[in-house]
Image 1 (spheres, rainbow, N blue to C red):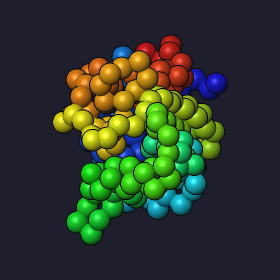
Image 2: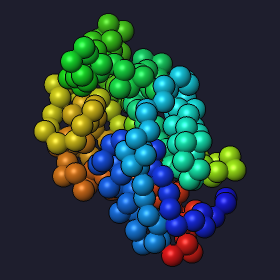
Image 3: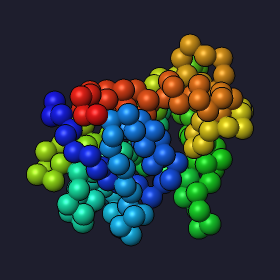
Image 4: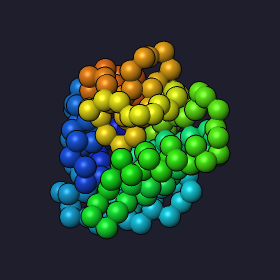
Length: 204
């Protein structure tokens, strides 16, 4: 694994919440995090069929536009009885002419399970892939997963996306019923971030 020796890193996102999460993680290492917003970068079209492929598209575009090393991520939910769908199309299932509607997405997922008479427990996993790319094209990839079951009706008011229908293994509550700090400590992104931490150890 290549050690990250720089002091500035471009987080290839327009999502301020995600930017804050990475800033908090990397602050102990003295790394300044910038974002696509700082450079007015457009969102590249995600055309790959894997999380790593789409993260690579975002990282490569950011590196090419700025010359800075970049960190990109892609994530989604894979439902076992739906052959891994929606997967990389997780957000697409929520798209409407008026923006994203994740109640629509969750309903679509459950209706598809009902149509297949999928047996209980209806297994699924959240997936996150982080891709760190250097200006010379070298990359390191870190993956995180959290497994669980889908529930209906949905439960909880916190979280986002498919959180209200996802109950992680070992818990009686859905992600959306958890305190955000509790959920973030066990999430798929937390698992990937913990793996990535080794790249920065010794960089402070």
